[in-house]
Image (cartoon, rainbow, N blue to C red; front, side, top):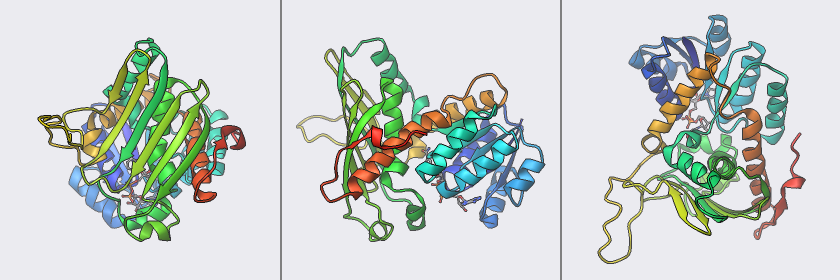
Length: 337
Ligand SMILES: NC(=O)c1ccc[n+]([C@@H]2O[C@H](COP(=O)([O-])OP(=O)(O)OC[C@H]3O[C@@H](n4cnc5c(N)ncnc54)[C@H](O)[C@@H]3O)[C@@H](O)[C@H]2O)c1
């Protein structure tokens, strides 16, 4: 099949090589607002390069992958739906709740599948936690701890367009919590702080955040994020139940060391970026997207799914912005249509 890819920054260039490694993909055609970057990546990987998405869609692609900066997602997704092209779009669906709601309406009115890129749904550990909770092996789950801790910030110009730490980073945790528990969030409280570079303050963002969520069934979730986890890339989800505790991400490369005498776990080397931590998951999600394009499976994460994670991020953003102490925001306060 012939796949189009828009955006060849950090994740886009990585997706380009993954896509080209798939048996299902015969041709990859790429574009980026930065033509120089698009030309370079196309030459390195042996992909075609076109000036823009109009040319790409006119050239006849079977599927489109959107990995451009977050503000570009909504306009590109609108174009893809209008052209009736099955589309994979990186998280978050859009930069704002209004755009996300509009895209959920467009998706509902269209027969064209849209797959949103929450790769943790394809990680073996997260899938095992979901299976174990569903099978009742943990007993009743009372507490979930989830975190997205990046080793270092992305480039400074990324931050003002990211939507803020809750929409950009913790949105993964919010989706994962829904995925493993099958529960919706009832209320959210969030806070955060800045101890790192000035550009976070200038963008009205925080470099580290934390959220306390209550799920509809009474489960408590403690969620954290930081752009400054010097130990490495640490992404985990711990599900604690009345019978057992199960953790996704607790592997030999966990970016952490024990303070206890004689403990040598984890042996390392530690994960440094989302690319080495989630490589098999990215391959699996793009393989799934190829199946979606062929009509062999429905989208494993629709805009409607991603909207729910975005609403939680929206609630967290409101919570920490509304005063130093934040406030508890009931989900009923955040529109869902
Ligand atoms: N799923 C994940 O684990 C994951 C990881 C990183 C980033 N992301 C998401 O992927 C997206 C890109 O992130 P990144 O880290 O690669 O950012 P980046 O800044 O490194 O790259 C963004 C690219 O998009 C291009 N671009 C911007 N607007 C465009 C437009 N209108 N048309 C075409 N190209 C355009 C830029 O020139 C740049 O090359 C973001 O939405 C981010 O949230 C997801």
